[in-house]
Amino acid sequence: MKVTGARSISSYLLVLLSIFWYMVAIVLVVAVVVFGLSFVRTIHGLEITAVPPSFEVKEGESGGRLTIPVSLAMEDDRPAAAPALGIKAAEIRDLRGSLRFPVPVRSGRFFFANAMLLILMLTVALWGVHLLQGLLRTVRDGHPFVVANARRVRTIGWLVIGGEIARAVIVFLENDYARRYFSVEGLQFTAHADFSVSAIVEGLIILVIAEVFRAGTRLDEDQSLTV
Image (cartoon, rainbow, N blue to C red; front, side, top):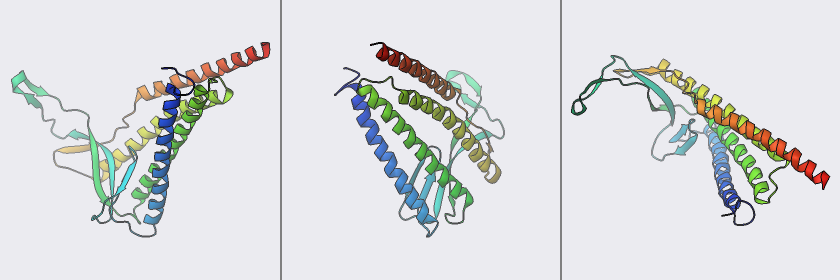
């Protein structure tokens, strides 16, 4: 299958991205409306998850609920065992999960902070998809080496790097919130950033590709002037 032109890989990807953009845009608009109303009147059954961003309204439930990422450790270092394999002392490490709990909607600062984070993350995702759409349009039309594409790819690279740093900070803060206020028998809440080095490397690779686009744009312009 061809890469550029009508009915090409780039054209099909552009259609999929356009559908995804509209889906994210609709979710973002609904989220802004729902969260705005929640601070004027109580919306029962409103549930928010900041990482990864999602929300829903469940009928039949009272108040609001939050789901946050948590990190756990065993308090007594109790070993796991697998007799059939001859393993008597396996270590349980890096327990991670989610904590869902009720929270006041209209008066909860933590709820408000998570709502704002969710809206911000959806907005950034919408921006990133928009940049990819612009990039794919030029590829579909057979003119990928334009000045705008170098800027788009560079911005996407910084969004990947900045997004990972922001995600790690959010996870750490949410972990720390659970560590300070919650307890469970036999387990201890801990705070970890859950930082992904691979995501940073991917962002750096995208920045390098942006420079390739910039160099290709210069060559394309020089060739056009020569002709």
